[in-house]
Amino acid sequence: MSVKLTTRQVGDVTVIDAVGRITLGEGASTFRDTIRSLASNGHKKMLLNLAEVSYIDSSGIGEMVSGFTTVANQGGTVKLLNLTKRVKDLLQITKLYTVFEVFEDEAAAVRSFA
Image 1 (cartoon, rainbow, N blue to C red):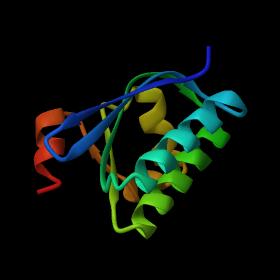
Image 2 (image 1 turned 135 degrees about the vertical axis):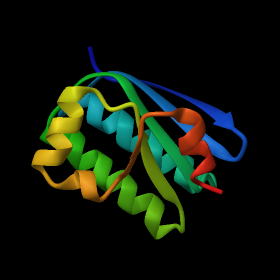
Image 3 (image 1 turned 90 degrees about the vertical axis):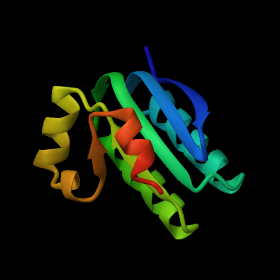
Image 4 (image 1 turned 60 degrees about the vertical axis):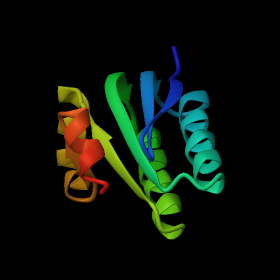
């Protein structure tokens, strides 16, 4: 199963809930297209909830970085929420844990954009 993304607004923050696998092919392209579409529609504050992401491969990591860069280049921010152990370990191995701001609590993450 590839990734399923749903978006919701919490104040002026767009929360993207991801469920499934972010992998080479459909999962990564769905992820990329969603982030780019939100950014081009003026969404500057994005919170990516990865609580239900069971697996992410190097292509998925690449799309996360690409999305982060796309949003940052348009004056926005992408932060991460509820990483699973596997995703957290992967971000630490790739040293990307220092690039993304990571939160365990959605309310605290939303407040951090203020």
